[in-house]
Image (cartoon, rainbow, N blue to C red; front, side):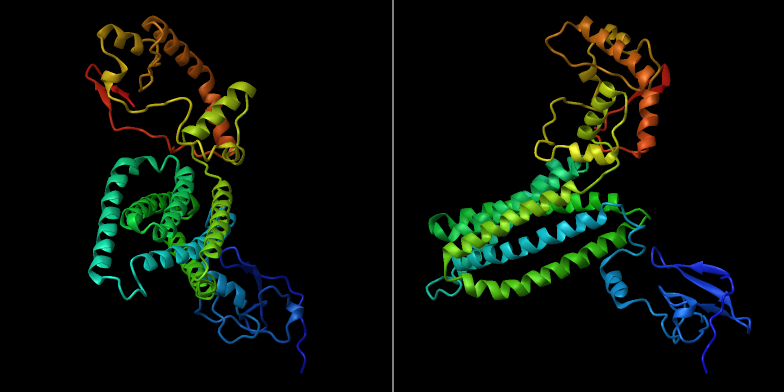
Length: 420
């Protein structure tokens, strides 16, 4: 018996996350009948009824209702609700990040092979005690470096996550190069691998901190844990692929140092290029010092606000650590003023909850006060338009990524006025 296709209007439609929608109509017996995923009423041979249970809508035995195998496989490695649950730059960044992780995995296998060769693996004359001591010194040097670097630079990596991410991966390549070169100079072997491990520990701090900052940017549904977990799954898959390729590659290059070194330089070039493309693919909608400088300059010159995509493409990645103009926020009051007269000059003429000071050592103090007063006048005139322009083109104005110190001041005669 053949079933007759119904032309009744559907009652509703549903979809899981951003997947393909399917429609539902009323059956003659009063139950709900669903179309198959990606198919129409006339495309399947029999009607089927929705049943409770199951993440994909509840149908357990109806033909044609299962989610395609590729979709189930992607769900293992992509956050739930992809692509709506993540930022638009998620996919290009993750693709290039996977390429760089694969290249780094292969380079790491070459470096590990060199280190094991250097400490005497396979050499009957090598001392186990000496190898153990070398390994302990290497690890302890890295641990101390990790603590010191996290204390020194930990608070700065949120502001320039892209630059620190690129820095970490390039430093990782330098560390692996040192490991490969270490067996060539056995007299300096211990010192070389200690320096290498110190660099790798710095890479671990910078890479982990910036990965957390980028996860916060990518997660759009309060799903940081899911985004982070799936990123770990992707990295594990890539590392596994790198391990399998390394098992085939090492026997071919281990007996030829020049070939091994050539493979390393090729993989390093691929690693740096993929990292650059990954970081350049990011479109971060919050303002740091460099993006703010670019947006302000464009606004003052042309009267329009740059969008996040344009500003991120123009943001320098190699020189982002050293801006041409220094901006200090949340500084102690003694760095702003040293006299009552000077303080009164900075306070008068505006009611904003902050103080501005132009630090221009070669100019007279009188000129500095004039610059500050004129700056407040310009801000009163242009800032409302600038703020609205930021919001209109997609910048996030509720938070920023400017480096702000912890100093605050409260005026006893005017408690609502604070130095931010």
